[in-house]
Image (cartoon, rainbow, N blue to C red):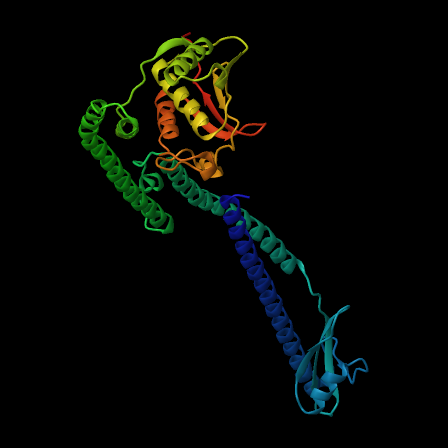
Amino acid sequence: MGLRGKLGLIFLLVSALAILVLCVAVYTQAQSARLDRTRSFADERVQLAAQSYDQSGVPVFGAELDDPDLPPQLRAAVMEGKRATFKTGSPNAKMWAAVTVKDGKTLSIVQDYQTTDDSMRALQQALILGGLGTVGLVALVSVILAGGLSKRIVAVAGTARRIAAGDLDASATEAVGKSKDEVASLAAALDTMASSLRGQLEAERRFTADVAHDLRTPVTGLTTAAELLPPGRPSELVRDRAKVLRRLVEDLLEIARFDSGVEQADLELVGLGAFVGSAVGRLRMQQSLAPDSVVVQINGKDETVSTDSRRIERILANLIVNGLRHGRPPIEVSVTGRVVEVVDHGNGYPEELIAEGPRRFRSGMAERGVGHGLGLTIAAGHAKVLGAELTFGTAPNGGALARLVLPALETSV
């Protein structure tokens, strides 16, 4: 049961209990008032009967002298010189009234006392109908009020999901409207958190871009200088480290472009299966890979997609190189329709990466090797620009599984 249902149920139960207590109190008070009226009527009759008897010696109103059925409690009260009334219990309840007359005898009258009559039945029916109608009205109002509150809370939750998805400009305050209750306070706190997070991310983006741009010139000079060193093992080590540093700077610049949001896809129609095969072939030549280190399999009919082939090739290269570096060959690349899967035979992706996606400068578990954690981040950035879905998981037979799902080709009507 959702919040709306729970709040509505709580309001309904509380209101129903309050109305029930009120109806019982009203009915009880009405019964008490009716009993008082009956006592007063019986007392007046016995007084008139006593006056008549004292004057004429003749009982009226059906009064009896020394009635043997007189209740003992009433008899004891009259013997003390009191004029009293007494109601016997159900069934066949009766109202008695008695008083001592001039010759010392006890004069009493009795009348039937019905616990319910037409007026009480009418009151009972009115209370039941009124109570049910009030409960129904309260239920309707409570559902409306709970629905409004639930709707605003759902709006805050939706804004939180948008922020988690990267839309840091989403405003929870605008979603819940103008108010000064707890929901508005929650929305304001969420907006404050998003603003702080937006500032931190912006600072991180500026830092990444500034560092990459500032390092690009000296790294280029270092690489050029390393090429001028005389042949030898030390020179090879310097050139190798210089190349690694240059690739790192290029990766940082690429991530900075993703963060700035300026990257756009150059779409073209591509036969996905054939293109993946040729891209893997070019990667084998560039990386000097053995033919059996990367295996390509096309399942079913080759599907044509509208995409940016350069970015597809960049994603494939990063996924395959990551598998070769941190997993074990052969790397299996399969194409099924619009889906491309890359599987290695290593220890698989860490659970954190599978759950949260790749994060820069975090390479995962130690058993998957070392690195800067930028390759998968860049692949995810290119997939986002393409409008594709890139997910990471575990292959059925073990090992790391990366699945790229490209958007369907739009057809005009």
